[in-house]
Length: 417
View 1 (tube, rainbow, N blue to C red):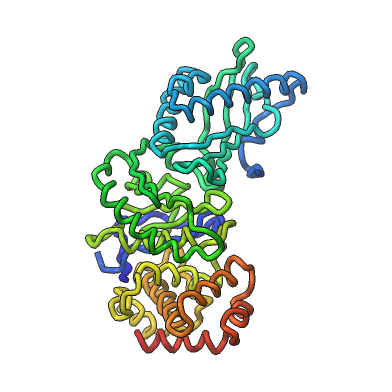
View 2 (tube, rainbow, N blue to C red):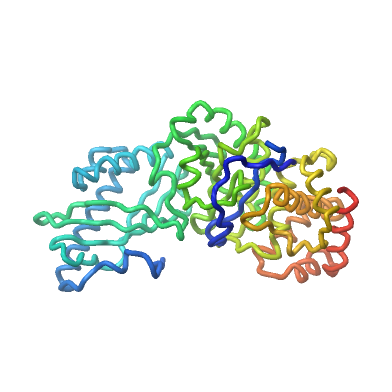
C-alpha cells in the first residue's frame, strides 16, 4: 500500500510522549501517512487557605460535580449547566452536546485533594478533577481525563467558573473538549467529526465497521475494544486534537487515552481518492494490538507498523502493495538492512517514511508466510505486551534465534523490492 506525500504537512513531534501518543501512519504513498505534570498550573497557582474552609468548599464543589454528572447521564442540559457561571455556559454547552452525541454512558467526577485558593483573588479557587467516562457501552473500564477547574464562592454553593482543557502531555485536548461533534455509531465502532464533514459519516462508519472485523483478529493481549473510536479531523482539528504536532507525512494515528484504550484520528487532508479503508484497517489494528500502557517506539517500530500494514492489506498479494516502489528506491540507495533502526524521523521525506512502513510490512509478511498469522501475533504479544526483547520472544514463540530470522526477513525485503 502506497504512502503518499501530504502536501500541507504540519510541524512534527513524532512520539513526543510515545506511551501516550501511540502510533502514527503516513499518508498513502502516491505522489500528490493520577499524577500532576510538574509544569501543570493545577499545582502552581495557589496559596495557603485554612484547612477547614478548603475541606468544606471541597465537599460542596464535589456535590456540584456529582449533580452535573447525573444531569449529563440523564440528558438534562439545563441541569448540566446549572452549576456554572453564565460566561462559562457556552463552552460547557458545547461539551455537553459533544458528549451526548458520543453517547456518554458513564461520567464520574473525582476531585483531587482539597481546592487551592487563587492568590490575589479572594473567593476564587482552583480544583484539579479527574473525569472518568464510558462512551456507548455502559460497562466499560472508564477512561480518565484530568483537567483543572476554577470556582468562585457564592453563598453556600460554589459556582463553576471554567473547565480548562486537558494538557497535550496527557493526551489532550480530546475532541469532545474543544470541538462541536457529529457522530455515527455502529455495532463495533463510533465515528465522530465536525459538522463540516457530516456528509462523510455514512462512508466512514461503513469503512470503520468493515475494518473492525479485520482489526479484531489482532487483539493480541485481551478482548478487542468494546467500540473502536475514530475521529475524522479537518485541518484545524488536526492541529489541535490530542496536542497536534504530528509528523508531516502522517495520515492517521492511534493515541492511548486510558488503561487499554486507544482512539484513532484520521487526517482528512491526507486521504487519497481511494478512501480511508486501508488507513482504517491499519489504525484500528493499532487500537486492537498496542499494549494497554502505550508503546515507546524504538527497535520494535518495524514490528508494530509492519503488523498494522499487514492488517491494512487484508491478505492482498504482496505484489499489489503500493509501497513497493518506495521500498525499491530506499533499498537501492543503500539501506543498511537493520530492522531495529528503521523508524523514520519526524522530518523525514514522505518517500523515506513510506519505505520504512513498506519494509516493516514485508518483514512481517515473511514471518506470516513462514509461521502463520497466529504465531506472529504471539510473537508480537511476547515482544510488546510481554516486555521481552525480540530475541527472547523469537526463541519463545518460533523456537529459533532471532538473528537468522532477522536476516531472512531482510533477504526477503531485498528480493521483493
